[in-house]
Structure formats: structure tokens, C-alpha cells
Image 1: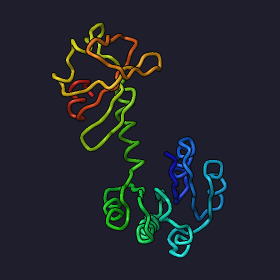
Image 2: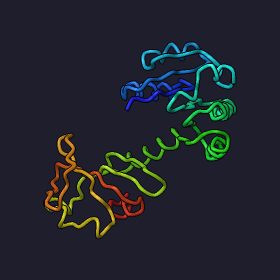
Image 3: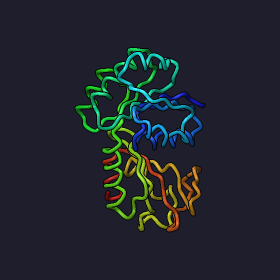
Image 4: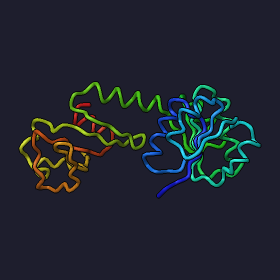
Length: 216
């Protein structure tokens, strides 16, 4: 479903968000005080305006309550981010998502208008640390504080066995969501699915169980 998004702050992080939103075919209104940033993001958004999001009259003129999502992607100026999140909620924004770099910032944002908080630097740092310190970990998605999805190579001792024979769910409390071979995903995993050296697996479970099973 196409959604309308108000994106406030189009530095590096905001520009990446705009690019992704375009690929997902959403309608985006971008806001920033810096004219050069607005010029740079124009290819990725439906419309853009130069303006100060801490100015209530300016925000009010945008009709923030009409947007499905308001994303506050302001980077270095936390005070502006906090004021903007608060004003958005005051003006009737349905969903306010704000960027934070530290836990204390998240607490203030959540108390002052933000419905959700994202930590781009922290989340990317964790992904990088996990992804590039183990040759058998190819990708990683954290779902919440406890659960994750990993793409892993097939452990050597499992090669040539069927999924039902290794019984990963019973032994490790882990689910195999899919296998991948030559870049093609197979979501139809059954107990008879054969695990071969040229495949990888997408596995879901608690992080501690995944660590124990795959020596992460």
C-alpha cells in the first residue's frame, strides 16, 4: 500500500531513507533548512520544501495530520529533533519516528512525541560486527531484543542430511525459514529438504540459541 511520508532532515541518513522510499513507491514530502540538501534529494521525493521544522506555523502549514508517517531524520542537532517530534505530535501526526544516537536521546524523544525511535549508527555497528567477524554469517536482521534472523552457510556436519534428520527445532529451538541456492530463495522447507554445500539457510531464533548453534 502506498503511504504518504513527511521526511524531516535530508542529510546522509535522510537521503538514504528518501531513496528507499522511492523504490517502495511511497509519496514523500522532504523538509530541510539547507537548500543544497533539498536540491540533492529532489530526484527521490514527490515534493520538497526549505523550512525550519521547529517553527510551529511552518509545520502546521504542511498538514502533518494528513501523513501516514512522519520521520524525523535530523542528525547532529538533537534539540531540533526533540522540538520537531513534540510539535508533530501536538499537531496531530499519526506516527512519529525519530532518529537517536544514544539511549538517553531515545528516552527524551519517546517522552516528547516520538512513537518509535531508530538507532542507525548503533544498528549498523552491530550488524557490521556480527557480519564481518564470522565467515559463515552472510546476513543478519535483529527483530527485537532477543530474536534475530541469520543467513548462514550450512555447517559441515549437516551437509548431505535432510532438515528432518538434523531436527534443529527440537535440539536448538531454531526454525529454518528458507534455503538459498545460486541466489534463489526457496521458502518451501520441509523435513525432506536436502542440505548441500552450495546452499545457505535463513534461520530464526533467540540470539542466544543462534549463538550456541552456529558458534557466533
